[in-house]
Amino acid sequence: MWELYDSLIEGVMSDETIEEVITGDTWTYVKAAGRCGIAMTTRAESRPPRITPSEYRGLPLRQAAKLITSWNFTEASVGMAAINAFYNTPARLKELGALQPGHQFCTAGMEVKGKRIGMVGHLRMTENPLAGAKEICIVERNPQENDYPDSACEYLFPACDVVIITGSAFTNKTMPRLLQICHNSKVVVTGPSVPMAPCLLRFGITRLAGLAITDTGGVKGFAQTGIHGPPYSYGDRFCINQN
Image (cartoon, rainbow, N blue to C red; front, side, top):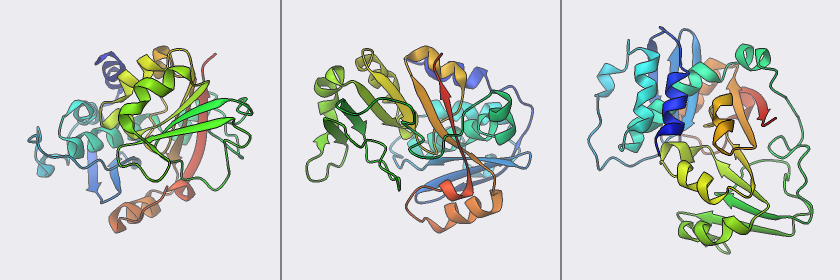
C-alpha cells in the first residue's frame, strides 16, 4: 500500500529546506527555496504528530515529504504541500513537456460523452468537464443530495468508464485502494493537491491534472484567510498523461 508514497518521496531529490509553513482552514502552504506547494488541509488529529510545527522551519524538503505517510492528517497535509513544492513548478513541468490545456483541463481530449463517470468529491470548476456523460456517480464522505456515501465506491467504480479522484485522496490514504478498484477505468487525478510526478502513472493513473503556483505571495494570503474554493488564479494548470 505504501509503494505509491515511497515513489513520490524518493523522487524528491533536493537539499532545500523549508522556509515557511501555513496550515490554513482550507489550504496548507509550504515554501522552500522561494517556491511553494499547496495541498488541501485535511483535518484529523486523533494521532499525535511526528514533529511539532516549530520544527518545520529548516526541515529538509525530503524529510518534510515523508510526513505524507503520517496518520495525523493535518501533518500529512504539510507533507503533501512539501511534495508539491518540489514537483509542481512551472519550470519543471515545462521541462517534462506537460500539457497546458485551457478549457476543461482535467478531461480535455478524453471521451466522456455517453460514458459512466465516477467521482470522488465535487469538482469546483467554472467549466463543465463532464458534459454529455451518460451517468455521474459522486461519492462523498459527507454526502449531499443525490451523492453516494464514500463506501459505495467499492460497488460503483469498477463499472465506470472514467473515474475522477481528488488529489486529497493522497493525504487521507484512500488513493491506493481507489486505484485498485478502478483498474478497468481511465483514472484522472485532479486538483491543486495533485503532485505532478510522472512516477504516479505506473500505478494505474491515466492523467494527472494539477497546479503549479506562480504567485507565491498571493497563494500565501489565500491560505491564511481560509477562503474556500480552488486557488487556480494563483498558478498555471498542467496535465501529464500516460503514454
